[in-house]
Image 1: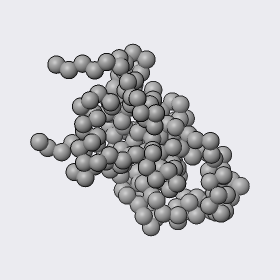
Image 2 (image 1 turned 90 degrees about the vertical axis):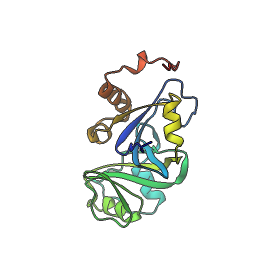
Image 3 (image 1 turned 60 degrees about the horizontal axis):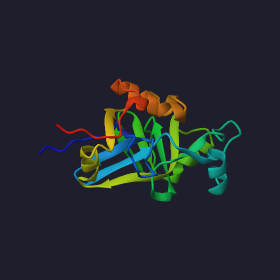
Length: 186
């Protein structure tokens, strides 16, 4: 069977998602291959701003910088580590090119650039990420845990967090409130 590549797709948690880490989440898949998948939850801000994160990391942040922007819960793996989803990709020390001009960077140099006003024009910063072992995500999709749809950058970078899940649902022509928590299999 051919490997499905869900890179640059959204995972929409179905209403029956019991895992509290993922209930009512929209997850952006940054990488999906035969070894597994890596994604970031993009609609769950935590009680921390970029200003507070920069302070904690002892990084300078210009007064015109994005200090009031929220930091997000990216997933339950490595929650002490920062992940920056951004565009354009740029030239950072540790960047995964996701698709087009979207990159995922884990090196501190991107935050230093943001602090001095030289960072990417669009970004979302998370603590932690979501990861799946080989075949795990595919099995969860078969078990009706997730809906998938090709991602749109504007949903991640241009909409407030609370509008991202409904916007992704509209890409499918579905209203979240009308989804059943019962799976049907033909």
